Image (tube, rainbow over all chains, first blue to last red; front, side, top):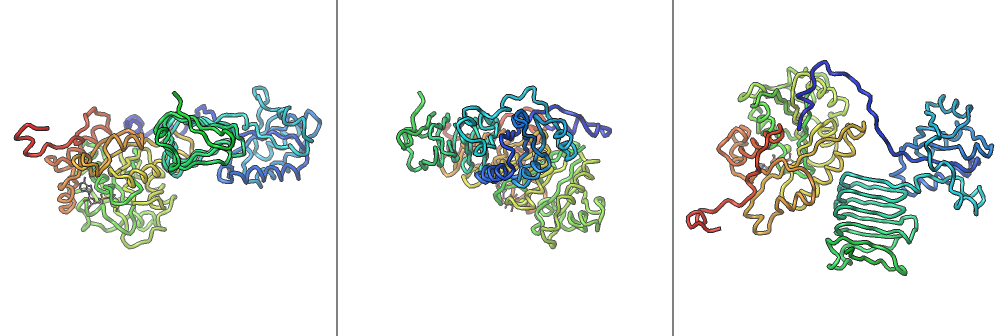
Length: 247
Length: 269
Ligand SMILES: Nc1ncnc2c1ncn2[C@@H]1O[C@H](COP(=O)(O)OP(=O)(O)OP(=O)(O)O)[C@@H](O)[C@H]1O
Ligand SMILES: [Mg+2]
């Protein structure tokens, strides 16, 4: 209820420090070739331009520095900005890099509690470095949303997407991984949007306008009445979308 | 510091201005110094419903443009000396409303008012955006029909992503549902969504249900906010809403079908 008005006297403090946790994508670099970095970054961001537009990002150069490949931070920051992202931190930099970052107004983060600073071996090993310099660490992360996703809103997750509320008609949720909706799913849900055919959608009440896995979709009209409003899981089996009630 | 309330909906004609006038009067009647602002530039409706249309000298846009001071433009209500109205301009175009200008006016009002009620225009364009941008609380007015509910849902999305609180990562705007023009007999016939249907779709805290009532038209024709008609069902509904907003525990009314005269006489259901 409207407590602010009642409790705040005229000489209320003008500011207050609060501790808050944010989820920010980390750009882990594994090539020092700026041309390739720029190309691949542009390609990534163009997949979901709205999502990436002005998105904050922390870049991680720890792995490169271990290979003695020290990037020029000013060039890197310019490339990131050019892709429409806003660099808000450096991780794993050497002294010179950290100094350059600070000169650009980019804060320095420590690597102590970072889990995914090294590019995953499995992905990096079989390919030449030149082909996989950009491995966003968010790929393995899960996005958790606790508020309803309303009509007209659009959410994109690079990993799994878990929503602890409803998804309204007219809303759209996309994930490269799985989608879980612990509420009714009335909007459009697209899992495995980068082609992951193993992705699944789970929801506690199916009333979706459209569901899709790896580009194979079904619209509301094509969903059988027996699964409507039921808790279901949705997956691909031999290129067919299967909607199965969870009992 | 004032608490800024936006009365909004997305869809037009659902009862925003009626609600703004009623709750502003309700809060003022309880002794809270309240201002109510008309954001509907070009249409100017609030002053009619408040019955002060013949006392308008300066308007909101004049204040934003620095052509008049806030004190010159604010009109004191004739029924309640704790209530002030800031009318919209009928002649200016909507672009005169700027974020900076609105922010300044609200900041100045916040200094000596306890509540500022912003009557939003319909739609999701500039006027509606500015009406909600600075809000602390949102009264989302919805009629029990699918298109109105859908528009409200859209507006709720904007409240949670495009407001100042959202941009600054502050505590989100508190959102309340006001279900207006509710007619239980038509719900029963299946012509209208029920309270439960609407709550199921929006999953939002219900502040109150305002029945469809002739008293609303009578009140607006005579330029007296309907909340002052304490005999009327709509007036009582708004009084309940103000009480609940201020933290009082009031059971919901006007949800069930009124018993018809015959049913009363014969005790039928
Ligand atoms: N509870 C009610 N019962 C009957 N009529 C009502 C009720 N509430 C509003 N109305 C009528 O509906 C019409 C629209 O009301 P109002 O002007 O308050 O809506 P609004 O949302 O402000 O409209 P706009 O979007 O044009 O600004 C008016 O004629 C009003 O008298
Ligand atoms: Mg209006």
